[in-house]
Length: 615
Image (cartoon, rainbow, N blue to C red; front, side, top):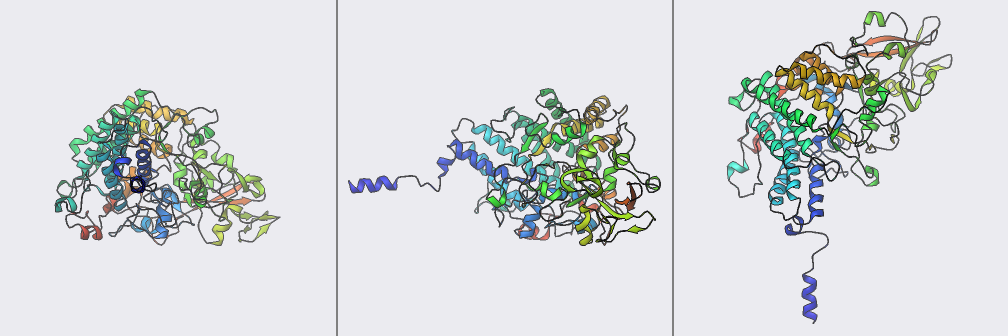
């Protein structure tokens, strides 16, 4: 009897570990494992490249385990801001653990280290390959759907790689230590082969995935088609504007451009015709309506979102992000906020409501004082919904002469006698010479552009605690992008009526005048404004092969300085040149259209070939 009891005990399943047989045939365990793989694809959130769900990072962090790197690149902390720092949208101000100021000045160098998605990518891809292979043998009822989700994540990983490096080794099976050397040391597939893989996968899984996910945030048929449309648009652009190099390893033949644009067009058309999504247009106030696209959870425009829920990092959680604390104006836990200053050139991209250009005439603007309403009141409502500046309302902000709950960005006071008073601790008739928003800028000798990022900011967020308190969901795909993808592909296929209609749907929702004609430049302009700060601009400039021109600025970018006029209560404006204030001016080397593979990776795998310009 005692022996029988002993054997019974030994046969029991341990509670802290699971065998393969249990994992692959238990729906809850399978879902739990797949949820981890969703997390291990942080590039879906503004191209963040690592995780920091503990003080030492996460097991997937293979590209770099330095604390500052993890803080500055992780999805939870500051990683989601980096691509707008290296584009023509914003400058880096201060406060970040990892900034790209030198990269903006000199480009990505041969040792890489900037926005890498290689070691972390292959770590995730290996686990996804394992899930796909083992999940295919599972007896669980919805195993095929879960495998299709894993294939979606793998396709996204490869898309994030190909837009960085061009051709990369395409690995779809789990290699073993005793595998053949060609498996352990794979050569790079061509750029076209990787794009074709992503398109083949998204086509196949769109026929397997459901139209509505059983859990919000899972990939659906429509998410697969959205990824397909984005990847095909990129491939079409590379074919049209890129160059075939390295014996076909990089680039796509120009003769294939129309083929990829057609794939994009068809994928967008299927989403549009499906009728499950529409432009969010529920509120009469166009500014608030556009803000709420990003604040209202599960709204009609969202095709796929990353949910940010649960406890904050300091409370033991890891599924929130830090956008609010990083981008908000004061009050802020460390007295700054405004990590990224929007360039004046970006602010000027927002037209007036009647469709006239939003560019400021410097001579006119500097000739007299202005109210904020006179300056910005007639702008495209997306401006106030995407950008904050002097006079913008914000809870708790110290507005000085502007009143409470208002952002005060004045930098100097003009006395009644015409004297400029602008010392950090000076004042005039009881008014501080430097507005509350700029006190830390002056103390730290940092130049402010005069603007901040409003998009995604939640006025109710806790910005007085630490990182990882934002609970807004991040929209990986939204319907407006599909219309923009559709418009661009349609235009390149000479379907100009379709392109014009799609663009005007977006402009009508925004509250500005419709276009009567359509051009390539008008489509690109609409992308820049509608998708500002959403991780599109940097990659768009690269795929159009215009980054070397658009991101190279011999005279730098521009900002605005607000000077309070004590006589009129208005503001004089001064244009600030080279607002980045860096030793070198912004440059985008042609070689940076592809990231470097790096010497260390080539040393580890002699079959890899370096990209041009980094040898």
